[in-house]
Length: 145
Image (cartoon, rainbow, N blue to C red; front, side, top):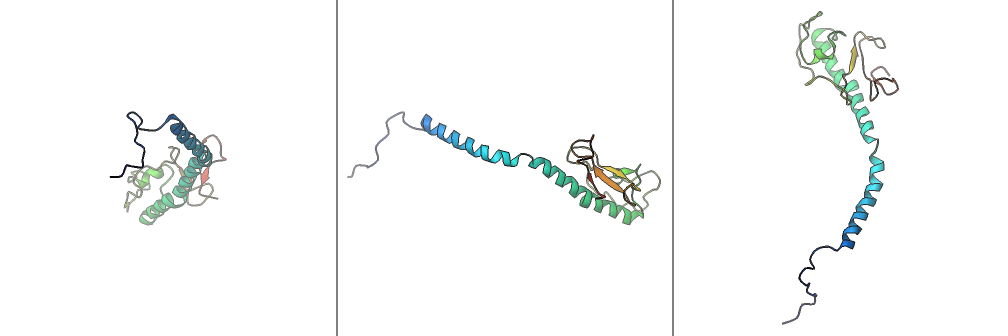
């Protein structure tokens, strides 16, 4: 029989050495330092994109369906709640066929969207989010631009 070319390990020499573990930690740290700066700020961009999509597509479609069914958009006092439950205030929704959205519309910053009908900027309705900072208008996402 042939002797194995591999040297046999002695008892207690199983596993990784401290140098090997440190080398892996340094490599993972270097990779993280390259990736993390590229990802910072992306969550805020994603939130803005979601709000824009809600305003220009999802909620706009729901409001148009409401108008097709009832002949008018919900009033400012009825608000976007008229999309989730039938409004009981005037003008009544005689052909309400909702819910038009599954849950109460809130923006990605957990604030309600602001709705006004008839709008100040558009004839039908104004719909917007105050963005991350409700105290400034610079980051508002609106349906009139």
